[in-house]
Length: 325
Image (tube, rainbow, N blue to C red; front, side, top):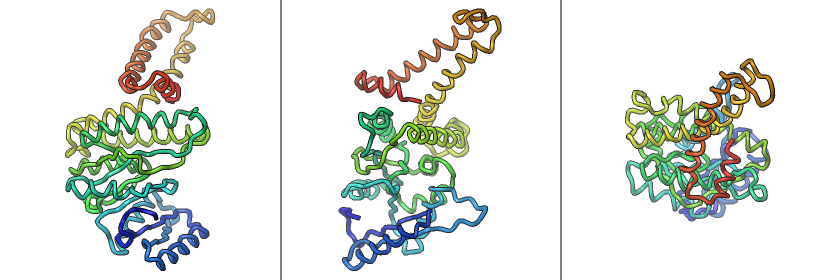
């Protein structure tokens, strides 16, 4: 609400999929207060999902809000924030100018920053973001191949209309939107400034659930786009650089899966072969299999760590490597 932005040019829609009566009351009270003080217009919206129908979760709620804002008068630009995200006062004034200056730029995002972590960040959550945003996204942005960060962004309504609206999918709607925009000839931009702040995982269980969900949904989205390989019908208008960046992103997100898979398969390999006579002896077939797979998996992992984290301190790289699961 406290944005350094013309108040009369700003409308805020609170999209509540839980249909919480107390939240509705609080929003309507705040709307009345701001209306009397000539503040930004505030609306409370909650959709109804038909029994047996597909809600599409966050993607469906966001699309509902975008369509409702159009019925309420429309706008050239649309901004979105997750419920737990706190934007800085200059969030809009930092992102909007990019969209005004570049006609082909469809969407601008900023790093996803957590303001709350467990002491000393034992789960490595901050370490992951310290490498992803300053490295991957900065380099991707130089190639006009950034991803939409679904926790907070500003986009042009015309660009969304060009791809048929916000994607109605059950997974990775932000990545899917980025892919569709690039495939339609639009660019997605990234601002390096820390402009939005949210709540990080507070337990190992939440951390694992979050990362597994991200990895699983992202890989499914990459698969839908044919991993951006030549011949994929959904990537016709993507530039070569965009295809390469997307493919490398898919490989990066596969790495934790492959790491865990190797840890599971290597011991299983020994147990599946006959001829084990002691805890240190294996059959000839098992020994050959281990001699081939283990060095390859180890070298691949070491190479990945060197390329991605080589510029960081050894301790920071070690923390990331240890928590990459």
